[in-house]
Length: 181
Image (cartoon, rainbow, N blue to C red; front, side, top):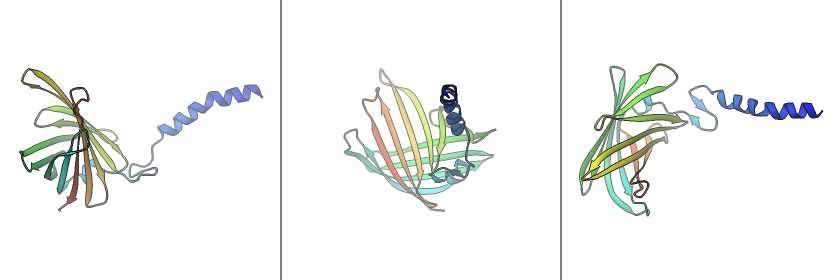
């Protein structure tokens, strides 16, 4: 009897890990509903409004935004432009190249040539970027995590968390997009 209990305890982690290793069909994720697909869900024209929040939660800036996703020779481009009320505009372009295998992508932020990492979980797509640049005599490293949450077929919420100076300047951007075409 003790040997059976011991054997059951030894095999339990194996069965648990096997359960984690199996995958549901790519269209669905347990408890999450329909999955988001970079190849189709980010393609098109989106317009939105956004805010930039300081670490203390106060609004630092507001802006309108436009996001255009398109394919060119099998490569996906996502270009976002933010139009700030008091400081001009800023553009972010990502070049996403699908790779062989199950939903794997190479990603580069075009303006800075920094690599980015793409992840997908349920109805959310994540693009993570780490960028280092010189600001006067200081070396600044910015980590940004862009989360695209698909609310329905026409609306998506983009949350961007970024920090610099070792988490001393955490900021959050929130953009509510509506698909135009």
